[in-house]
Length: 121
Image (tube, rainbow, N blue to C red; front, side):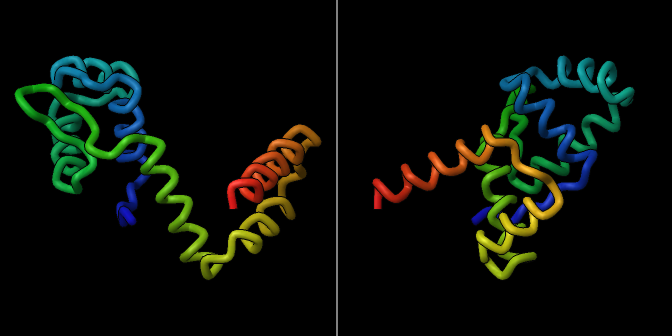
């Protein structure tokens, strides 16, 4: 399991890379200037840190992710359940829906996922 917690700024930057990858580092500087109001050194500092963490790669001036967005978010979700709910998915779901009412459509989608899982097992 990936153990990579990112701060809000690093996560926003990673999202930009995921949206545009592969992206030339010069183009990334321009995107970050426009979307985040960053200067070039800030972009390269955050890029370097995420490369050191093993999330991104900057090779020959082309930036791309080493971990896909969906894999990163799936792993972080698993870590939240593990760390905050002692690994209990039902406890997480109960906590989540106690504060946010599910729509009938959402309940149907969840039920379909459960049904599909039961068929596979």
